Image 1: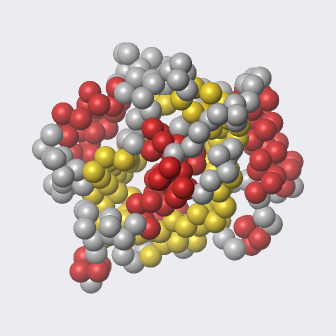
Image 2 (image 1 turned 120 degrees about the vertical axis):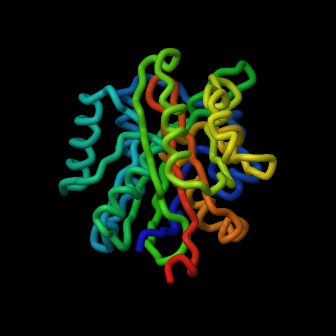
Length: 281
């Protein structure tokens, strides 16, 4: 079984809204802005949030994977994060993904390679919302727990690639990744989850011509960051929960593309294919 379904069990953000309400209404940062002290303080806040959402029965019911903030070049912070989590729960933590919103794709890939049937994912990351000054306000730490169930039919991860880059002006890995996606199959791309935020550079738009043979006027574009702000690791879960639970997307679409982009950290692309009963049989 390689198809999957994601159900969000718990969702805690400074907005105090459900994922569905956020997607429909967006969230206002008015009155919610908190001071940003340091990255070390942010890691501490993430640890405290982890303690509030972790339940002992997670490990008893299957594999637990942690989706954490993107820290591709900060090995000391990752070690501190991992050590602190282990001290909190008194048990070795095997699956930690410091990849932000791309973490869910890596978790799915590992789960498929390991032939797991049931996985609990815990996502913890900061929330940033664009303000009227075209800057991002920090709202605090958010957390979500979700269950990944592997099934016979549904959306299947086809490919996922993440490339870290400290100079996006010189390194544009999205273009290369999109070309690789094109070479994997001939099906059209029906829906694209894109990292639009309206403030930072939307470089990913420059590479859409690479997909010109796979997209058209019917292609659906989802731009979650315009409404939700930056949710990091939680964004990845919300995107795929939306994809796997929407009746509109099931059967009517064949390929989904997820583009993630965090300035000075990484750019990434993941593609998903719909597997029908006919294909399985």
